[in-house]
Amino acid sequence: MLTMKQLKAIEELQQICEAEDTIRLKLNWDMLRNRSVDEENDFFYLDNGKLIAFLGLYGFGTKVELCGMVHPAYRRRGIFSDLFSKALYRCKDSHYREILLNAPGNSNTAKEFLDSVTCEYAFTEYQLQWEKIELSGMDDIHVRPSVSHEDRNAEIQLDVHCFGFSEDESKAYNNRIRLEEEQQFYIIEADDKTVGKIRVAHEALEAWIYGFAILPEYQGRGYGRKALKKTVMKEYESGYPIFLEVEATNSHALGLYESSGFRKIYAQDYYRYHY
Image (cartoon, rainbow, N blue to C red):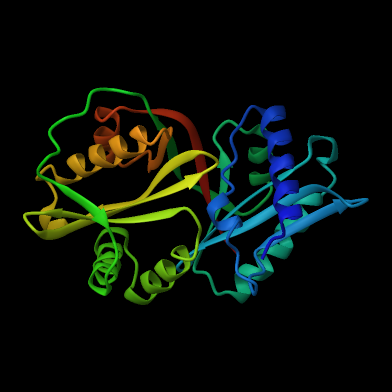
């Protein structure tokens, strides 16, 4: 569990690095703020009590993502490599099957480090922000809070069929994210049947849409588009700027989001690490 002092130090270092490099780091703040007591997924490098480097591990089932940063005045001293080595030991102990290194698409500093380790480019993920457009045609879809045991089971099956989770992985993942603050879980219904799910996380006065999925047998009927519109309007009317993420190669989802008013603002590149 991270202390308020540690979280504040990470945030201040992030602001320094982002301003220096004109980038946006993906530090998964919803996970950082809700680390459990027994987690050892955060690695710090201090100089006279001041945080000058940080690396975090973010596990998703049998996959883990790594993202970190070093203060501009302390770079090229082997500090990040030291943190990275310690993080790899943790990954091995946790038996992750896939290790992904996350770097802002326009970060030259990150690319220099990636060139020094055994990894290969995996994919790019776009971060999108909603720009206000007129939304309509969503009256026949119902988006309601997920509250029952049946709802939880439906969410697990949606992870299995849409995201490639095993049932055990989905159960563990859903149990963890339900402990996180400012998370809202919704079931999507059409004709009184559960057809999908969507989750909204409120982070730093922003609304982020995650875990959006429609069961395969109900895809192609417009349910996803209507549910997305309804969710966007709810968050917009509550005063939140709205964001989501999508893989660059997922042209179907990207087309849906862009036609619903979302526009690309940042790109995050992922690299698959090889032991």
